[in-house]
Image 1 (cartoon, rainbow, N blue to C red):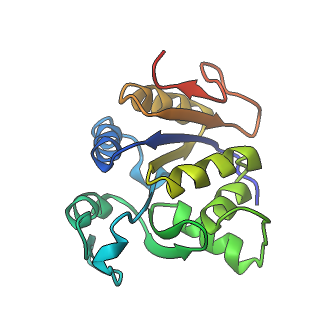
Image 2 (cartoon, rainbow, N blue to C red):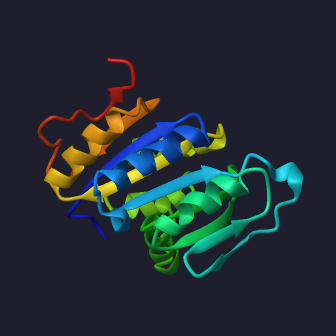
Length: 187
């Protein structure tokens, strides 16, 4: 399955930065059904056993529980994955469906995680996926927006203002106007 949408991926060093970005996108009216967030659970020493949903709220055991509980209600779909080589990963948004679809389709992607398989299935290039897997391994947070070229340019502009560590735009029609494949946070 290849996406007809553009995909914007931002990498953040802290959950506070990722949460602020999600809130900025929501405040601007960005369609929250087109937004995903991914993070490794860095507090595995707490013996987190999982999470559960209650209506539109997520409960998670561990130090990051307040963070996840406060923003997961904004997302359609959430999951917890234990990924070899990365560890426990929390995912919210349409990326959950992309991952499940890639896994159910028995798509085996050498050298990339299930998160990477989901991203690859919608057109994100493998070299970028390896970079995102590395970001997750090093306890970074990914915020992923997708949509039409216009929606992606708008999301990129909002996200860039939050100073991510890195910002990438992936387009099925080449690089959209006003975007580059890799934009450093400090310009």
